[in-house]
Image 1: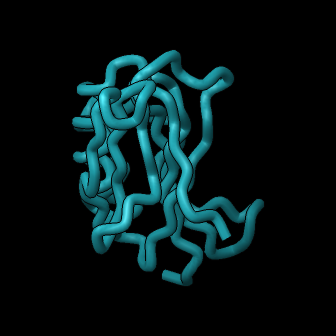
Image 2: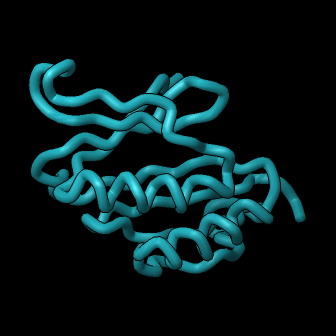
Length: 128
């Protein structure tokens, strides 16, 4: 089981604003933010649910190649809402909401590239 993951971003404030907006439809908030003076190397921000950060961004040179991170939703509506919110926050389309039957018959996902080109997805595995 994965406890947490993250990406490195080139513009920390821009990416923080992007993720605040893009992940809000799935219930994620900014849970924790730590400056370089605390971490000893760079500024970080942790997003998650229920007070537990499980997705982190850190200031620095973006991961190359860009990273793919998928978040799970219990229904399809948050997938659609994520996609709209992420695009409105400056994300770039990388595959609109829809069934990806090549994964399985109920795989409903949407893909957006964040400001650094990381492929961010929200997916629902349940039938409509």
